[in-house]
Image (tube, rainbow, N blue to C red; front, side):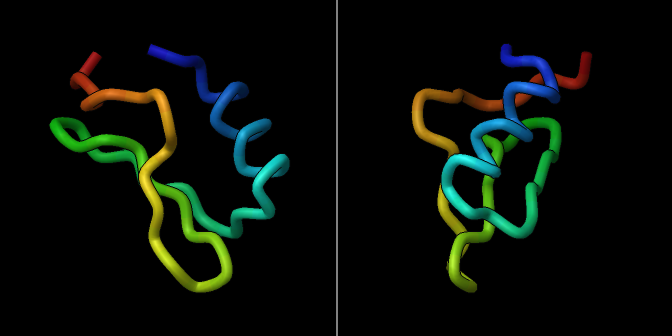
Length: 47
């Protein structure tokens, strides 16, 4: 799994305003008001 800093870099690169991280779900970003899954990332585990 990617580190949180990697997610922040992806957000900046895509112009995302929000990052949704929920165990058991894939990470999701809000881009231009739309929710989009973070490409290349699977379901997050609790750890």
